[in-house]
Image 1 (tube, rainbow, N blue to C red):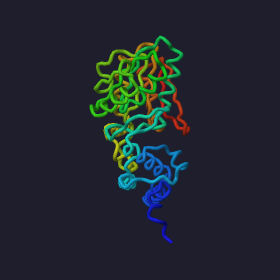
Image 2: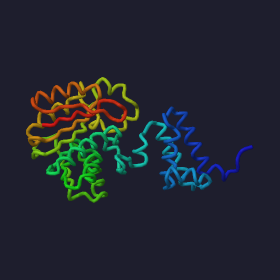
Image 3: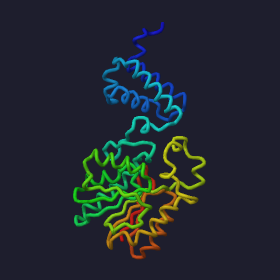
Image 4: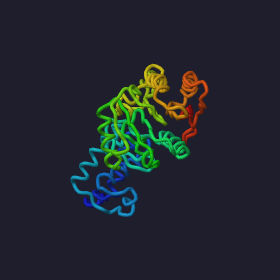
Length: 287
C-alpha cells in the first residue's frame, strides 16, 4: 500500500528520495550529499534531520530540493549548490569563481600557524592564489599579530575572498591584491602558495566535478608546475632572510619542487610534509 500523500513530504521520505536519485547517478556518498541538501533547503543541521524525521517540507522546499538533487546528480559539486564549504573549522562562502577548499590544504595552514607561533616577530604573510580566502582567514584567526596580503589573478575570486574577509571582520588585517603571482610584492616573513598544479595530461581524465571549478585555479600547464616554477623564481626577492615558504602540490611533484627550491636557496632547509591521507602534500622551505 502506498503511503499517504502527506508522508511523501516529510524529511525522512525526502532524504530517501534524494539519496536514491544520487545513488542511481553514481554519486560516491549519496546519503551524505542528500543530508546536506535537505538540511540546506530547510535551513537546518544534518543532526536535526534525524531527530525530526517527520518534519514537513513545503512545496517550494520540495521543488528546490528536487532541482538541487538533479544538479548534484549531474556532478555539480555540493559546495556550489549550497554556497559554502567548511575549512579548518570555519565556514566559507564559495561560488564557481573559486576553487572549493580541500581538507588537504589544511596542512598548509597548520604548518604556517606552527611557524608563526614560534616566530612572534614575524608579521607579514602573503597568501598566493587566495581564491575564497580560506587559507588567509584561517591563519589570521589563529595568529592575531599577522597581517596578510591575499593575492589572486582573478578579480571574481577576490570578490568572494573580500566577502569572507568582511564576514570574519578581518578587513584591517587582510588585504586583497589582484596580481600575477609575486610581481611587485614587498618582502614577507611567510609565503603560502596553493597554486594550480594539475598537469595537462590529467586534465583530460579529471573527475567531472572538476569541470565546474575554475580552470584558472586548476590548470598547472604541461607538467603542472608552470605557476609554481614561476613563483619560486620570483620568491627570493619576496621573502625575508630567515623566512618561510610553503607550497602545496601534487604528491608526484614534490621531488621536482624540492630541486627547484634548492636551486634558488642553496642553504635552505627544504622538507616535504604529508597530509592526513599520508600523501606528500606541502614543500616547506626555511630560508
